[in-house]
Image (cartoon, rainbow, N blue to C red; front, top):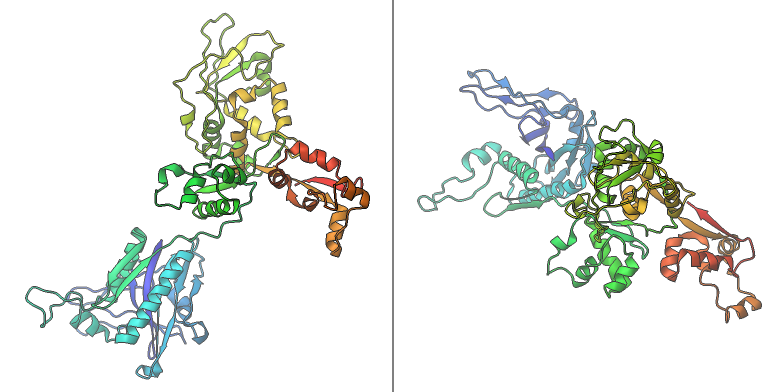
Length: 552
């Protein structure tokens, strides 16, 4: 958001002068004239001695009262950067105020011409924005202001005209003698009015179109800045951040429309390209467009053989910051909860006030409602896929222990697991533990995870929210790395070549430099994780014990 906008000039006798500013007093203090008081000229600052001078009021007039609004920064400190020295003119500059609260964005312009005093006209149109605001969208605005007014000055002397004449004799909407009765002719707007309109329009609408005079119009628009998206790999999984089907327009690119139809949060890029009948390169290009506009995000392929580990963001999940656990429950839970009394001590929450214990002889046990897992894989925290209209009774519980014959304690939590159970599930991921091992651990503890939790969604939620990260597997061949380092390429022996049916190398050898994760190998070689491991065990392109599988 623009906090202030100003027009500054360098005057040979006065130094740097703020000619116009909006809102008034945002750069230099202004005074409010009293009754019968002539307007007070803007304050000036000399670049050499940084002394502040203000013109006195007209003789015989009443005193003026200072405006209540205080400047955003000390103009005396930054004045030498508003109109800088010669090497910094005619280029975009940014200046931070001493308090580190605001950024001053400017484009000082110098127009050499013999008609000016000292043969040069120097001015600057600048914006003041908060220090933490992205300044990239405003750079084009500052450049456009400088270029537009520089051209207007070269053509008609728009800025160098006498200020009194510009605002008094030739104002906006002034009646002209050569125009018919009742007609008005556009001559020029005061600069103060222009700055105010530019600031308000850009802040409120993000664009402005302002006629300056009968021949010039200022057209500007704030465009959000998006960094170049990363390269899309064939093993990435795109996940939509919004309902793309609702925003797709028939005029969109046909390839993009075909690709969007197959983004489900599960399929990798290669599978999407195959199902959409689009080449892999065009699919990656289409997904980069969506990624550029922040409509999708990229995740890794989900495997039960993959490993995940907690990140520092897991602390926010444990503390339920901003209701993140409740959001997780709405996204991952697909059933209700019933706790076996034998396992209650392991997972019970003594601080929970919403747990209801039923008597052993009570026949009024709660019935729990569940729905099948939703086929929609878009990241949405709304519980729309957990419809309460569909009910079914479950004779077993997520904590069911077949060997236990003790009574059942029932808990109903709106078709979802309690927070402490979700926290238990999220915090037990470990780098050396696959998802299958993690699942077996909880199943052995009595939690029927698959009945009540969509494991893929749980992992996906943890990765997106910064609670988990994927531990990738890489295979490294010391011999292959040595050949790459020396620039040599090891040839297969005759025996190896005969075993391979010719002199071709093992296709897996190019993946043994430690730079290729198993996801890439699985996708490009069209193999499972187990098949890759079996191939590596019988790998003949390296001596025994040469290959190492790293987790990182």
